[in-house]
Amino acid sequence: MDASMLLMAFSGAFVGSHFLLSHPLRRPLVKAMGDKGFLALYSLVAFATLGGMAWAYPRTPAGAPLWTVGDGLWALATGLMLGASVMLLGSLVRNPAMPGATNAASAQARGVYAITRHPMLWAFAIWGMVHILVYPVTRNIIVALAIILLSLLGAALQDRKKATLDPQGWPAWERRTSYWPFAAIIQGRARFGGFGAHALGGGLLVWLLATWAHIPLAGRAAGIWRWLI
Image 1: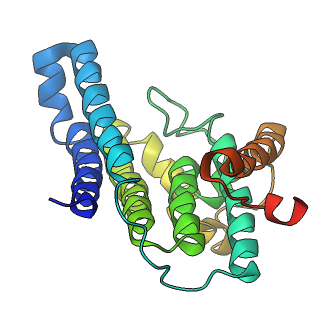
Image 2 (image 1 turned 180 degrees about the vertical axis):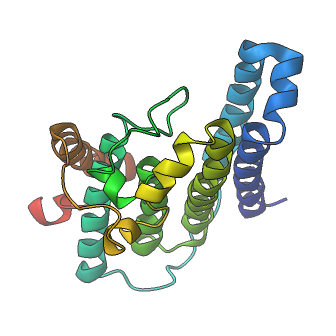
């Protein structure tokens, strides 16, 4: 099996094992192994499959880009990643989707939650979309599509799971928010604004650091650094 097939296999295993362990297999495995045993198994599988992706990626030929990436695409990608960074940092505070959270019934659809009730997962999905936009080669598309699928399908499955666990609070939260970004705002169920300093300031800092990190890690400038250095 060549490296590209291995990369596809490890990417599929990473996504598939996450869904299986997070949903249909979680309850029976927790019953058989206990919470700590299940967490150990989950972590082992995640690290093994993600490690396989990391191993296969540099061994897979990059190939020719599928399209030309000019300044216009870079500007779009830069703006999208800034938005994703704000969504990611904003999702770390008062998130009803976090494990153990009990605030779905009373949570306010403000800030990143006015945009979508899954800001963290959409941030990862946007990361995948952006990396396809600016680096459209086969090996990168395989990995990015795996992240996008894991994030967006995971968000939909999370809605089903949370509605079962919290049959009163989560449906009420769904009525105030939206799965698709900006849908609740367009429909008048939420109002844009109310971003906290942790979302705006933290998101900006993460965006600057993460895009700068492409220089030592990938040997190329990304984001705003393409125009600053």
